[in-house]
Length: 198
Image 1 (cartoon, one colour):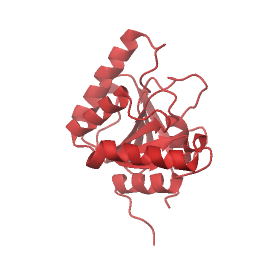
Image 2 (cartoon, rainbow, N blue to C red):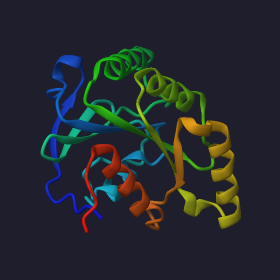
Image 3 (cartoon, rainbow, N blue to C red):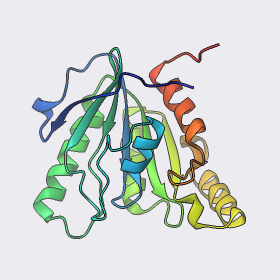
Image 4 (cartoon, rainbow, N blue to C red):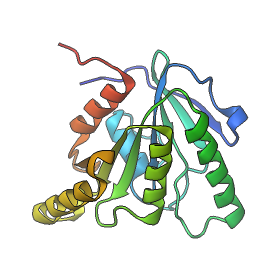
């Protein structure tokens, strides 16, 4: 287990020019609005309130960079798919994400956060496409697993694994119950190149 004892917020970016220097390694988190992305980041990094959670979906409207070690970062990408966001903002996000995935050399992996009850939306598929074009490893968190029975959650997991095949690894996750936090943390470590402690 990694303690992530030196987690630090770096900056929020609304343009490519505002991104932090493109060195070291970083893992991005993306997810549809209201998928539980901020809660997942907070649980994995063991930092309550690091990524802002809200009852109003779509609050993450900037690319937020967090340091989790020397030249190691987690990036919280804008939530997508929320209808109340103006069209001009959605277009801007799309251009920003396209530039991020095309040109970010330090990008070592992508976590896609999906509500287990509504996985693999068109927006999620688009994110998988961006990651594939960038040659970026993907790990899918099926969040809010506590909202389903164990059998239904397992069935959803098997279904998503079958649909994505070898393009991504997939797990069940619940920030509320702590389900899958250690597994997700180990995957984040691996993508960032953090060696497990003896």
